[in-house]
Length: 172
Image (cartoon, rainbow, N blue to C red; front, side, top):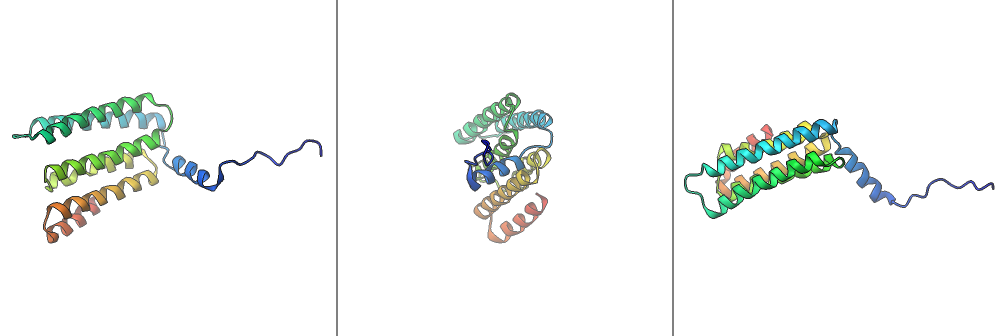
C-alpha cells in the first residue's frame, strides 16, 4: 500500500500521558521570570531563617543544626533554580512543598504553635501561588493546610487548635 504506516507508535500508554499532562500543568506562566523570582525568594527565606536561628536566646543543638542546614539547602535551591533551563515548574513545586515540610519540622521541634510560627506557612503558598499555575498552587495549599493541622493538633489544646486551624486555613 505504498509504505504508508498508521502514524507514530504510541509507546507511553495512558499513565505516561497523564503524567506528562500533570507536569505540563505545573509549568510557570513565564519560565524566565519564575526562575529569577523563585531564586530571590529562596535566598530571602534562607537569610531570614539563618538570622532567626542566630537570634534564638538559648539555642539547642537541634534548632541550630536545622536553622543552619536549611539556609544552605535553600541557597543551593536558589542556585539550582538559576542554572536549570527545564523543569522549572516541578522544581518550584518541590521547593514549595519542601518549605512547608521545613516549617512544619521547625514548629514541631521548637514546640511553637504561635501566630508567627503559623503564618510562616503563607510563604511557600505565596511562592507557589505567584509562580505556578493553579494545580501547583493548590497542591502546596493542601500541604500547608495539612501541615497546619498537624502542628496545632499536636501542640495546642483541641479547642484552640480547631480555631487556629480554621483561621489560618482560611488565610492561606
